Image 1 (tube, rainbow, N blue to C red):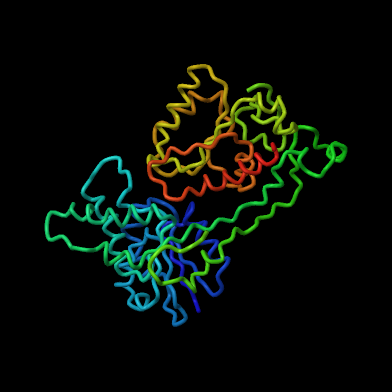
Image 2 (image 1 turned 45 degrees about the horizontal axis):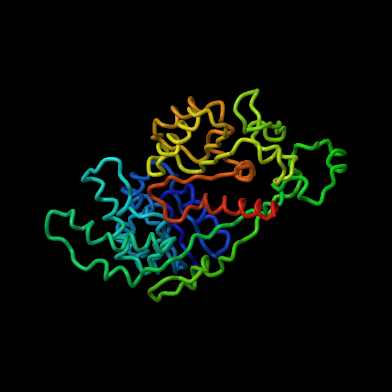
Length: 377
């Protein structure tokens, strides 16, 4: 049996999901478009895939995210319309917080409704995502001036289920402080690592979360309902100096000290914001609070992570200038190693998102937080 994976916006959590499915499912093939200008992907991806997905008698299942206008694709490619079609919602456009209401934006939510009507299974990454979409259909369709279709929620709901987002969590032992690991201080000194360094030589391994039911697309339950799945003194950080801003900058965490030690507790609070640089994540609220703390002369460190796309809100440049002396890192970290390193250093992770249904970044941060609490205990 062959699974056809199609992703019209191959980036972020969309990419992460498709890569994991491709890794875990045998006999599948993936076709993508780069994660750029999602508005255009939602409008125009179907004709591209019509031309670039070769016909095959082996296809049995089509799995796509809701960025794709599935209705257009199966109309353009009747052979794909015969497959078992699974539509996955990372987010939904019926409740998306637009900056300015425009009639043309109606098309995005409308496309998703049409795609649900032609799909065989509609999967959502959370119950909230599913319910907010389904219960908004009636109100959304009232935006039409007349001749509105009726009872669309009743047609779509029986196809819907919750399919939680699968995540591979890292083995965070390599990010543990040196005195929580089995290596002795003498061994570290002998290697020239010193008392303020992390053990960087440990092999990086990833362990799978329990996602057997999540990633087995071939055996998805077709029944309606939910899928059950259940600054004080700072020290230099020589191995990761490129994460700090400026030649004289120092990292927030005295890495050679016990998490529960007085010196560790007296260092500046390290705040991390690990989200896309877009308006729906509400960076304005986050940075306004930090700039107020700065004005009050409170001591803290901040790392601003996440991807930036074409239209970056102005608040980012303003905040970087204002918070410059408190910034440890500013910008996207393409290396998972470096990204997890920053997460482990963090004391607080903040989400101000107006539009969030699962929060992959927050889930990953929770792993590091739990590990640190265990070490403190």
